[in-house]
Image (cartoon, rainbow, N blue to C red; front, side, top):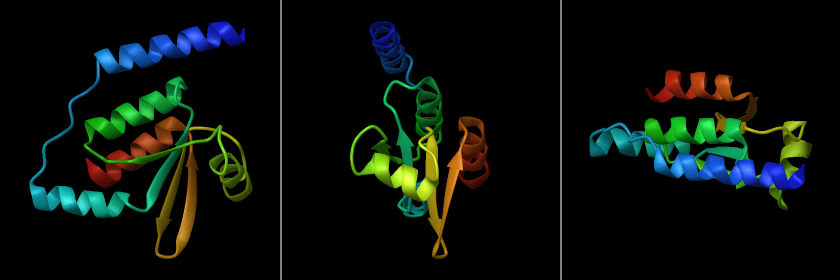
Length: 118
């Protein structure tokens, strides 16, 4: 089963590379505003998780330089579990107004990114 997951994961990454979406175009000033807003966000993910790929592709489509953290390695796995409450990916960590929000579920993350940056 582990070998099958590895093979399927590599296929997902290859297809993602081949059919990578184009980022939306913004003026330099607008992109700086987006970059500043995204600076306090991190996406906890597994590289080959299809739901994580879905979120990363959408972030690329919106031209959002979203920082990713591999939830399989220390210290990110521990941080996700202790602060986020569960080891589930994708998870978007949003830090705003001295508050931290942990958002799970790919569709919720995509809806949030659309609402904020589209």
